[in-house]
Image 1: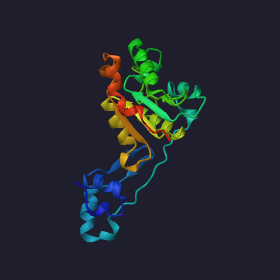
Image 2: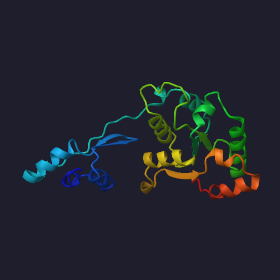
Image 3: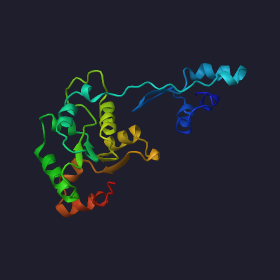
Image 4: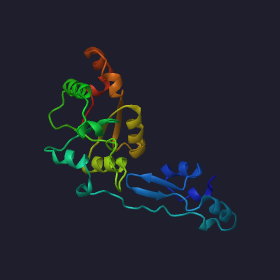
Length: 210
């Protein structure tokens, strides 16, 4: 377990992590060092409390759009008007990399028709790499977050609990900067009748995009 004193100079949002014994947090903005060595700090706290805290260090790992690999670079090149909502789901990377599932394509056509937002409002943005693709030097979640920041997105529509949980980790909801809206996974929505689909997504219909 980490030292309680090691978290005294941390931001309130980071204290629970330090108390849980974590030494590093991987955030969209980079790596935050909570405690260089929690065990060593626990011992040093006894003798020299003023020197036990470790300053939070930020490592700038912002990924420039020019460094985005496919399929993110391809999707970004097609943007003509600033999107206001990003849509993502687990199999999106495969769908946009040339292995699109016809049933999912039809499903999301129905979803966009139901939502009735103007063309260009949404951007489909993967939160994972396509199957079998070498990820290279970047994490998919970092590329996802880079796109959210670059396009100044406020609303994320995440279909499936996995993408929604990951998005909430990247963008903590208590910050109220980027709002994560969860919906059932595509596999759960595909078999639904039109009225059942509309009921399942009713909470998104009235989403205020301002």
